Length: 172
Image 1 (tube, rainbow, N blue to C red):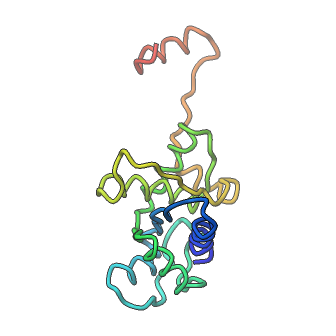
Image 2: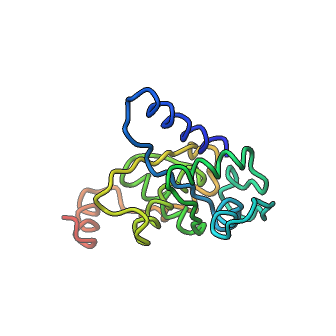
């Protein structure tokens, strides 16, 4: 709750002093295994304690801090709360590493998993500009980092072995 309300406050302040015209849409993303904001948002009910059943332990918070500020921040920005599956979080950890060189912990990769879901469900259009916030380094959770990657390929230490492998996967 503190992070998302802080992001909103920053944009609000920027708008108040004339540096931006509009507050961007803010999306709050939680694991489906611990999604008290998503449940409250989707059902338009007060936030209640939720189970803490996710591999993203940094966001496994059954009773988040600043729930009213956090809920209002998303609503005032015309944003939404959405949940993602743990498998999508792991996939996003791998994507961040492979495509961006970012080693994120599960909670940090949740933002990318949420963006991917928002794109496939039409919440965000492919032509829109977005920024995701990756809140934590993968060194905080090396066990789940290992779950997010494939087993390494073992090759003979010869250039010919590398060339053969690259040809096999269609890269060469």
